[in-house]
Image 1 (cartoon, rainbow, N blue to C red):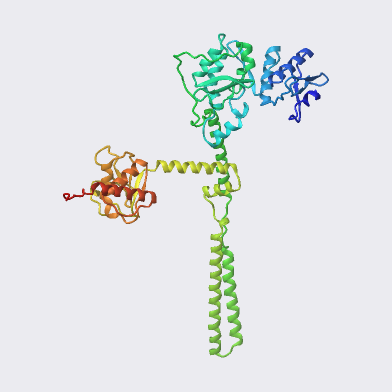
Image 2 (image 1 turned 180 degrees about the horizontal axis):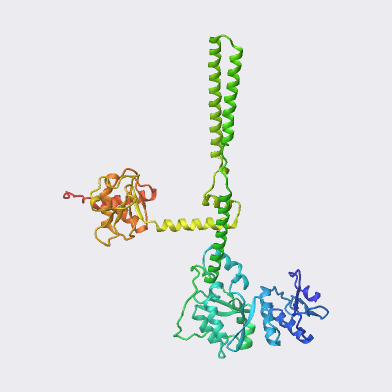
Amino acid sequence: MRAVADQNARVKDPVYHVILSWPPDENPTDDQAFESGLHAMQAVGMKDHQYVFAIHHDTDCVHLHMTVNRVHPDSFNAVYPDRDYFKLDYAMRELELRFGWRHVNGPNKVVELNGSRSIEWTSKKAMFQGKLPTKAADMERHADQESLHSYARGEPRKHIVKIMNADNLSWQLLHSNLAKFGLGIRPKGRGLAIYDFDHVSAAGIKASDMHEQLSLARLEKRLGLYQERELPKDLVIASSYNKFAAPKRDPLERQTRREERAQLRKATRSRYEAYRAAFVKRRVDKEWIKQQFILIRDHARTQRADIKSRIKHPLDRKAFYSILAFETLRAREELKTKIQELRRELKNDPSNTKLSFREWVEREAASGDPGAISQLRGFSYSDSRREKAAPNAITFAGDIDPSANSTLFPAGTVRRDGAVVFRRAEGDPGFVDHGGKVSFPGGVLDDELLGHALDDTRSRWERPIEIKGSREFVDAALRALVERGYTGDLADPSLRARLKALADKRDRTNMPPVKRGPRV
């Protein structure tokens, strides 16, 4: 085995070691154990390789040590097992069916349906079926494009699973069913590849990645040698691969993640409520303030008594009393200033301010808390949805009475918030005059309604106009402003440039033709 391995200088570790173990209640014979080892070798692509098997019966569980030379004894090519954990697990389920052993669930499980048994994935999640190939994962993660691997393992795979159990399965039946989904199968290297029917030159994927039964060895054993595709002329294609389509996500997986996020955010909210309940705002102690004023008062009384006992002359005593009163007043003012500074410091201290839920979440997210990060992402999504749901509006002033210089005010309906709703008829979406802006909650693009709103509020335009809403609404608002000869400013620089371009285009269109005189 060492001599064979030395024939391939690029192989650093030619030994492939695997242990096959049986449950304590099963006792396979030596022949069954050796057959299992040979089947496992074939599953990982090492059939006809050199091997050494050792069976152990001296433990609670019978197990087989497999030591295989990865270098082939004839071609000297080395095998690099890819996702061998999943291939070996599938092989174990096959052995359980062959020898009647108890089924043990792993990545694959044995399913009985209509009296027949088949092997399927235990979980639908890709992480339990072997990860996506690196390039396919990068394509979906960074380019937001569906990989051929994901497409083939979606609806096409479900369809192929059904025909694989058909008794009349043939190469042409396989070709035609793959072609219905814009896919083809052809030899590549020592196996088969699935490729995009419309882009034959593009790189494909391993056929066994789409379904385990699509390996070249298994198909040739069942269907004979590979046959080229001969498709009928009336073939109807149900779907085809489009790499620019966004990757599809499993609805059940999305629901599970949604519930996990909900539980995580619920726990985050509970932590915030606990923070609110335990928060105590620090304040300058009122009792301390009272004691400080008492100390100043007692000190002044002591000084006054001392002056009274020491100073005998009335005029001198009166002068000392005045000085004492001044010093006492100054001490009180200094104490008041000190108290104000202490209160200002406490007010400006961030740790002494009870945070709102959003502020608290931002602080926790900065420290890497997963629940806070999830909630912060929720805030972002909510803000974006709110912006999208915001009605079309034009803002041109601050807080102004909607009735100011309005000719339509008598015909409007005043709401509780002071805004006025104007409708041309019953059922008309109308517009809402807020005083400093007009909004169009109906979402219907109406040039006439837009013109009424601008004409009625024109006398209130006192600052650069801000236009927000759908693309169609912004375009209509710019056209309406140009039609009314608006030469003022806009809050958005990009809209300002568009307004100028529309005005220039209008001027060129309305420019009278140049009259030329007769030629001399």
